[in-house]
Image (tube, rainbow, N blue to C red; front, side, top):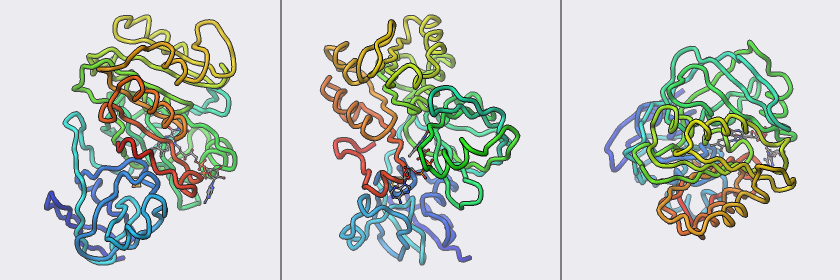
Length: 352
Ligand SMILES: Cc1cc2nc3c(=O)[nH]c(=O)nc-3n(C[C@H](O)[C@H](O)[C@H](O)COP(=O)(O)OP(=O)(O)OC[C@H]3O[C@@H](n4cnc5c(N)ncnc54)[C@H](O)[C@@H]3O)c2cc1C
Ligand code: FES
């Protein structure tokens, strides 16, 4: 194993990176922040420029990093590994509400694993030590015996630093969900994780009302944000959650959000929506249709959207139609391997 020097401009920071390690990984473990989202070569958020040196582009999707971009000296640091000392230039835009917590490896133990909705499990793990993170960030899980990892968002607030909650949806034929978490994973099993990753975080210095849109297990990071905002008084603006599902059997944590709405009537509103079932107390239609019908304008709000990429794109368009600017909207796309193969680069309408 060889180690090379990586210089990150315009910061002028130098770090060491092994030849089997991604440049992003080396940076995040050494306290150098680079913008990133999926960490799997799909979203293009981390795209940067090689000023000097050679890299192996690894698993970068050819949609996220096109051939002509490689020829022009671009790279995706989340996939690229150094073949020599390398200097890169990145578009580093650290948000002042964001706290940089260097990525570390942890050994965890499964504390509980339960069915909470159709094809959906709640997984609780206990880390071997405390981890600091921002509300909305995620961890990487090593899938035993495969050498592969998958990313899952933390659903509890950052004041809870050892006992971490995750919501996992089963993907038929999926290596991590179908082949491991839904099949063999059990209470007491050890789990290797690393983190925290991502920049889909609650902007705690903001005082604007915020509309949060969650599809499926896209609820996980949003639940962390809402609980942090309300229970820890971390957010002073009003929070409105639109949670979408097909029918009630796909929806979860409804009672918990109803309780939070009762406890914080002036600070939190909850709108669960069903697209294929009519039921009292639930919005009727896709979340985008309910938002459309219930709001003349959302001008002056911040927007947070998380879930499957098509839902995120649709919600983004809806919020923009209600007069939110792209700079006011934060998104997390739950890209998977199929999205990567099909070119799941996020909409050019918005970068973060
Ligand atoms: C930032 C982030 C956070 C996330 N957080 C969560 C979360 O909190 N909860 C959650 O449930 N999910 C989350 N996800 C999604 C999660 O990381 C996994 O992608 C998801 O669980 C599927 O993983 P898997 O191993 O089960 O399926 P995979 O093995 O990745 O397969 C997914 C699908 O792709 C197909 N496929 C596999 N390889 C290829 C290929 N080469 N070409 C074409 N098709 C292929 C498979 O057949 C399957 O249909 C998140 C994703 C991101 C990017
Ligand atoms: S973070 Fe590098 S492509 Fe998504």
